[in-house]
Image (cartoon, rainbow over all chains, first blue to last red):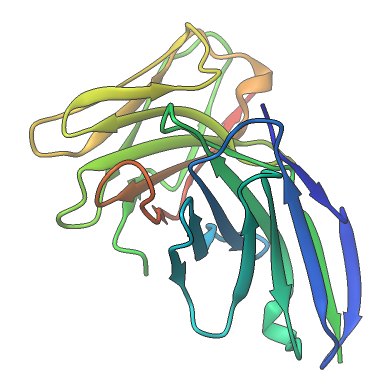
Length: 109
Length: 113
């Protein structure tokens, strides 16, 4: 089942913080986060694995609550380059990654 | 540049036709994934291959098929095309299966007229 992302869209001013949430109704092995800019391919940001391991970019932080099957991506001191659509992808024991509908982030100068 | 290549970049064809999309994964990656992204839609998982074998299947239509060859490149075949098949098709690769970051290719934009 497709994970639910919230909010659907957010507008920030440069320097402000944002949190993007992702929740699933299934038990998860991992949660993936990707960012896609208009007309480009998605780019990997972070993976959070069951058991606490995380792999990703140093400037990105995220959390994964295994019991609640929820993850949050934290964007602090946002920059213009953070604009884009953020997708969470949830991976279950079937090895499929199902992506949410995305959260559109627009950063204003 | 992710290291994943996809050809062609653009494809325009007519309803009822058949097309083949090609993907070459990053060097050393064993897994290949195919996704469909329609206008303003999310990424719809189609199918995954690992080292030549089908690993996982999403909501892939029966008109669509894929395979991964011994050299690890993959092809997605779309037949009896319909207007609704117009979309951006992404291929991604990863080193392994579970818990591996995916690297996406630039995509193939398919337009069915």
